[in-house]
Length: 329
Length: 262
Image (cartoon, rainbow over all chains, first blue to last red; front, side, top):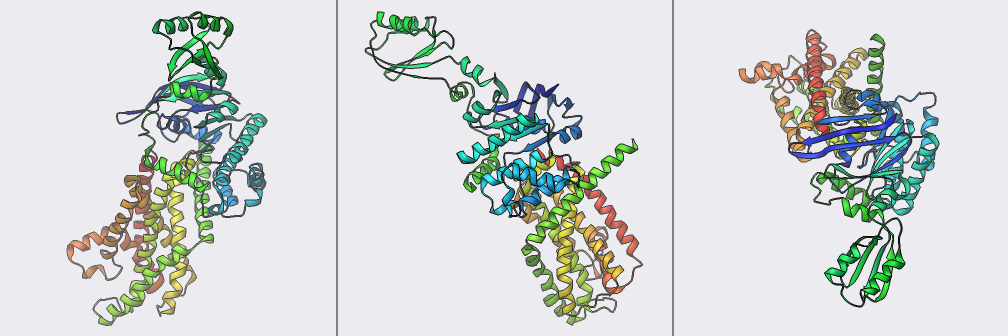
């Protein structure tokens, strides 16, 4: 059974299409990343999957349950950590957990133990009885994740789980999330703006832009898709149009362009035949004075496919919240 | 079928009680707002009451004027606390709290009612703070534990209904600034066109009609019977009116609650 199965899902707000025919599926136990610019539809997709808002058309199911029809069953199987702050500041961390434990109907016999286990798992054991308003941004995020994992969900939805956290907290949060997924087989579906997180922690990635899925696959697949090693060459003379055409037609070349004074050549991901290419360049009379190379990163993939435009759907309050959180940490 | 209904009911109660407990715990940490909001009703009792009472212009049925207005002032201030509760709802919508609640196994109706009666908890805290002040300035409250508990129940349920109304308004407005203005715009007409400060019979006919469909009239009447006059002949009708108000408000608020989430 698929943990998440989405078929031609759309969500319209008036004339604005937040989601425009999305198809995707996530297997059980997978750690799956959703990437996309602000306003691309990441949060909308996540909110539909957690039954908060109904889709306009199309089908979506979580653990085999239809989100529109069997919402109540879906909600018992999932946990959701929204992008915005979702803790009550004026009570303690323990009390936050206690209220959610009661809402989720955890057995009262083991309630205290489940709460303390989850808090300790996220490294908040010592701060349990402090007011949340005294927590740092990182601690609040950990508390939110602690309360989400306490109910032992089958699918964990995390909307930008590490937004505004410092690098050490980000790493700590991700170590917990990955250990949760590998130990208990929890499916993790997260969105992020940090490409390195998607690269290191996600099994598969989906890039969404303007409400549509534009790329889908493992981090390696996606990077291979835009070619292999990128060479940046300083050449003795400006290549002519004809030279460029010849370079592009070589077997081992994925793409080539002139950037400033240098020639940029992206090699094919497979079978990089550097020697024949260099021989070819010298036969054109292009002497190489300097050369540097780099591997494609997810940033390159993202910049190529994600159409970054004004984030009108993100809304003022979303931006404000993000800023508040960043300021707090 | 019966089993499922029972399961739903228990889930429902569980969530509503958890949200009421949340409010109780919040108040245990910080009651500043309750104290500050108690200032206004105390002013009514200490300043307005004695001055207007000295005129002896208002037929109160033999009750001292301060005693007469105490239930009205109490209801006005506790329902105002409840109305402003919608603000918390808007704030929770702007943060992620409401999203997280809606994605949890909580029936939406239970969220609406749980949050509403959380305002009832605030109202009770406020009542417990105002009553001793009223006693100190000489208001003669009937000493009968049963009457007193019943009066607290009326205040709790009344505040719940008004909090439901504020959730309804919050769903429509979606912004804090607009909400604050509207809160007083709702409360003052209801307060002045009720039996809080004077009997309905002295009002012009048009306002009398409004007062009779004004839920605050029934809330004040019930609390006045239980705390001041001891005359309970109108109590069943008052309680019925309050319950009808609550049920209607909750039904509409639960429907409009989905709107607040979009």
